[in-house]
Image (cartoon, rainbow, N blue to C red; front, side):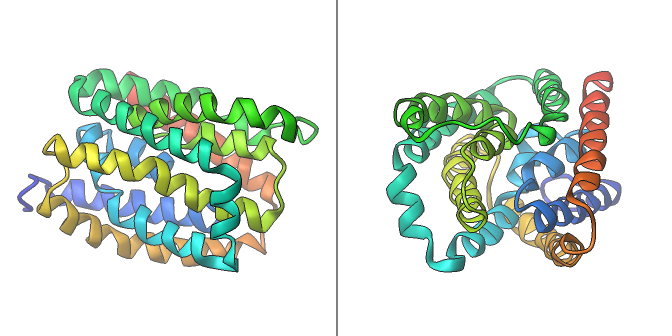
Length: 248
């Protein structure tokens, strides 16, 4: 038994959740909080579930952002979006730690259900560079608040899909987005007394199944149809969201 009060059953569920989250991360380049938190939030408070993503999120996304030497390019091009995303996430994290767990489970479940069909966004939908200049800052703030409160980065990912970036730039951007939005969230959780030494130790422990899942996901990425994977992911997310809502 950990100081956080996790039972063996809860640890098993957390291990499975991060294994699956790592698998998704390896295949699509993102999704650790979006996959792990809804699963864990069925047995733990959402704020604690979010705290457990600390080490997996930081470790995998620092590595992701460091690939290809694109860090400077990403920061230079998207600093207004990333900056306001961080501010919004900090504000949203206070909602996460102050609202009752039952309400947050419903909020997270609803967000997951609403976003479950979004991997099938039409390829012709795009946002022009001219529009991005004025749209990025307010969208960054709004999506940061949503992400901080629900630990859902999927809306940000969908927004960047619409920017139609080059593949390598998109993957690096996912790392910058995750760090910009999750770092303030983790600071907020620490300030709220949810992310402390015991939670960080447990987060380091669940990084192992995350890394295993990510390695398998990278292996699968070149062997399965992205379209088929998106279909499975959409169904799984919808089911998880429904379970969170019905189970409250």
